[in-house]
Length: 287
Image (cartoon, rainbow, N blue to C red; front, side, top):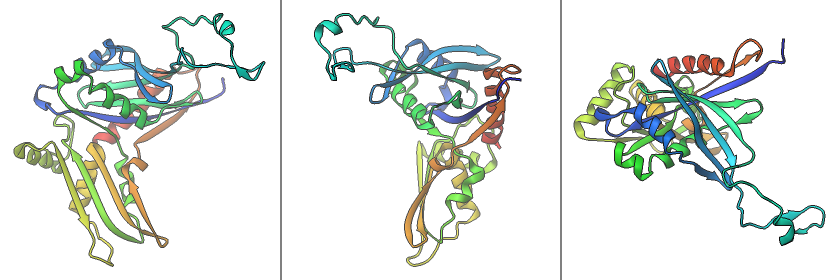
């Protein structure tokens, strides 16, 4: 038996504004075929490096790498000085090679617009905010925007932990942002009502705010918590309050949907582990 490894996975939700004509399979294929790489921090870039379709799902890989400024200065460790031109002349890095590669598996369900990705594995990590920023940037590219229109991307929160962000010594404010819920994912009656209301009013985004009477603590109703559950899957919930005498803020960003599993690489592949995690996370998402 080999040394056990552990993989964790997390999820983001992509929702096109034009629900009636949305083609999420075409969307993910176009993003891959355009080979768009996004600079998300300093010299760090990310892109989709592989994609295949199987049984109605899309399996792919994110490649994260460093893009070196080829016209920048180099440090010579021998001289502790800026490298001389004649030294640099000996360096020949092909323009299509980039160092410090890390790869992360993902699975995209076009029916639920749900992308589940490897957030930790083999000692490397990929945060949901990086994946979210990647898709937000890609979806603004002219070639994508002209074909698919606008879209919203959100990190999927764990609604089982929603109670945690309501816990304060004194809860003073609750702000909920609901982007138009996915009309074709399995939702409860309340979420369907929210979608119907937003569609009837021509609303793409709904903002709901509750503010406590001064000096008192809010007591969120079942309806407020139901709105919060919808927002956790399709937007964001942010709460404010007093805890241990200090003003604090909590958010669904602090409770991302996440699952992990140890595995023996001699018995099961990384792809199979991601499939297991993705299936469990999908059930949590639709429950």
